[in-house]
Length: 352
Ligand code: NAP
Ligand code: ZN
Image (tube, rainbow, N blue to C red; front, side, top):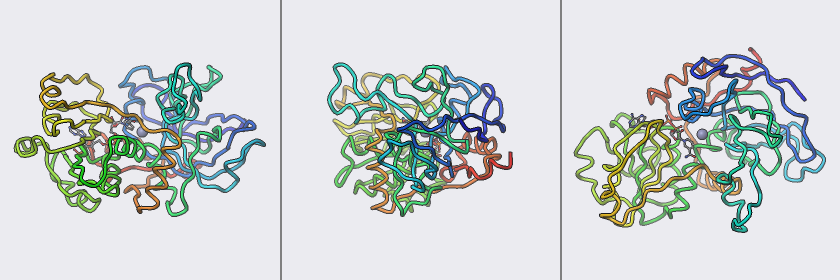
């Protein structure tokens, strides 16, 4: 066991503050990681605020973790001390399931007993998981990604959630040359979606609330940029897209978005509004359109994303902050005032 500095929320909606937590001694298949950076995902805000329900406190959030291997258990073969590594949204998962396909590892994030990096329960059924706003984490070697040399750790961190959450549906629904794709919401997830879809060769539009981020979006690789606050956007873009990825965390008019799909097009929901969203059946049936959802990606796919991004020079735009500034950062995320991902510098935790 080791005691490490961390930042936690003691109750729903309480500001985060300094604390210490225990990390288990590495078992034979475990890797002990010195966390260097952790991204702030909007999911952290939903969960710290208990907006989705079921949050457990005290909570150390953070599931966009990048760090350096500090020690390895005796059976570990994939990593060695000093390696640059990442941890995403889950730290364990069932490797086989009765009746499931043999390639179950491809969908391990969807399996019923996947262990979430925080706000979950370890395999022992009694130890709450604690996330990346902390100095160390101990994880089984099968749930760790290798960070390519060309990607600095502060930029690698957000790729563990924001990067894979957009890469996975873009790959699954065939983003590439000849495909028209819209990314709704230019935040942490959305800006990675623009960069990755562009690198895949698709024609990319951003649908943002206003045009205030237009210059940034175009620099990231968007071909077109539209304001959803302008009603003419929805008129002129009817029947345009093969694929829409909706990253918005707030309630929006999904019928209006579905109308922008071509026949047979798909809107993939990755943003998770706290309120119910309803749709009119006509929005789907009139174009044989699909409404789908997608959640992060498997460990293998996350590694594939990192390697793809390294090959194409894709990294997030980050603003590195002290962990002590996390409460202010949360307020700015709520106002969509982030360019485009906050990342906490773990070295500041020693000043707790
Ligand atoms: P974020 O950085 O806050 O970005 C969300 C973006 O949505 C904002 O930048 C803004 O973009 C747009 N937006 C915000 N409020 C809006 C409103 N009232 N109406 C319309 N658009 C609005 O958040 P994020 O970290 O990218 O996460 C987005 C969502 O995805 C969250 O709900 C999060 O929990 C969820 N998530 C899901 C997964 C998954 O696996 N499915 C993984 C990670 C996160 P513009 O300023 O451009 O409009
Ligand atoms: Zn996330």
